[in-house]
Length: 130
Image (cartoon, rainbow, N blue to C red; front, side):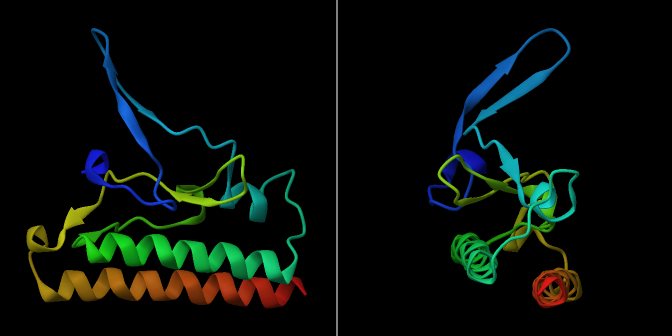
């Protein structure tokens, strides 16, 4: 799935490597995560404008995924990488499914609710930090 995606806010897939015991996924290097920026030991105070930029980039990436009929199903700060250029790259597609693979409307509704909750919590956290 990841190998077919091309968007500035989706981590770029470069290939795979395998040895006897492991399969390695080679992807774009991103030195930071949103989780580390918010909760890590080296967490920094993000300016309100930067929080908005990151949130909009996440929304753009998710909009692209949904336009490709893909539901991520595991969006969280640890799965939002920050590239060296400072842009968002959504990663970890282990739970992602094409919409037609999802068994019920109820399951789809559940994950959309989680997505909305994530952005509400991120927004609330941003306001609390002011």
